[in-house]
Length: 107
Image (cartoon, rainbow, N blue to C red):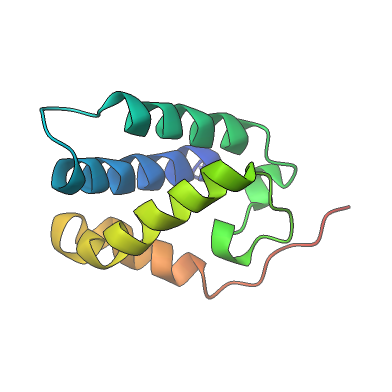
């Protein structure tokens, strides 16, 4: 059975936002701003025109985030990316390997 790529991408972004929020915001769990960003990212993934052929966002030819949300998600990814190896090593390595694949062009 083929793994759901959208579900997998949602899991990666959830982990990245959790790491970012834990280090940069006070309190337990996600703050409201990080929760809003996670909801937005999941909504964008659900609407991805590539569907199950989705490349990683870094390699994607279609940028579907609003400029402010794109800035925020980049900040999260830059911060959390290197730390993923310590918190979620298997997830981080799988994600890095996905970046090596060429994106499938849109029909």
